[in-house]
Image 1 (cartoon, rainbow, N blue to C red):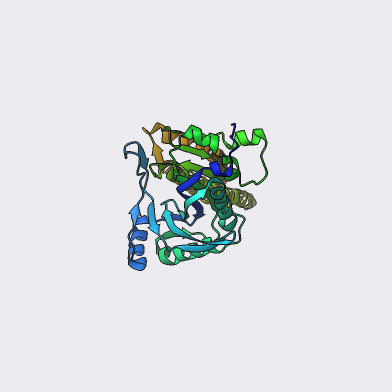
Image 2: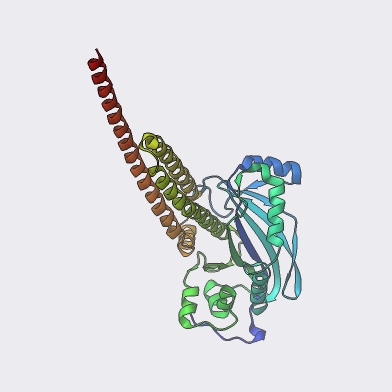
Length: 378
């Protein structure tokens, strides 16, 4: 993409926008959203809301279980040489994910200053920073909503995402003109040094527009959104894709931990005596079957968390985000490990049946021997 070189006097100015930092946590196995609403209303004494996509008809987009949105107290942190105050909120998903959000306002900034604000925000509260902000918010959330968490995690997995959103420039702007006048590469890459032509092409490959005056560019860890109507649907869809990625990572790591443990248990059972092997095999088989059933049900619930049907534009953005975040790859890995566990389950069932048959043969031989001895005694 060719970019026009402009003087500072001709630089784009962001009249209104936001820098939105997301930090996702695997908070628990499940979250009782109804119970969380009750606890929040009683302890925090604030209103709650079930999320929906404001710019999209309900019949076009369907939530499996609408997430619960809660407003938190504003957060203060240092970004560069400036102290920032960000609005904080959290969105809870029933499959155990909490999405903490910090939203920084941006007003009357030149494009280079807006880019600097985005990168300074990432440096201050991004994944490489040592800020305690996210930990403090998570601790507050656990304290208020702990009773609504089923199987809370002690060391939760995390994902992060950064969104630069512009609601208005100082003059009307089309998506085509914006791509010519604004250098999106430093904003989306966080790199101060220029990127090669190929790297720039890959970075800006996922671009979408529905109207002439809106634009979405998504990358692995950042996105730029220009939305004059100030709708949040695209940002919400990107959040959901990140939530699905994190939850599938949770299942993947859980199976990674479980497979060696299952192997050791199977080997231990096979070293036992034949008399009790049948019972041990059956117990292990039931455990494997329960694990497969649990992960399969949970994974299906994550897959069905958001269904985009009639809104073709939003479906394209959602599909691109899922592919870009490599959610299908993680899902495939989970399915492959489940298939291995199913094979182990089948082998255990076969071993259990063989052990039972062997035990039955021994019992028959013993009975025959007893009958012979008794007949000889008579």
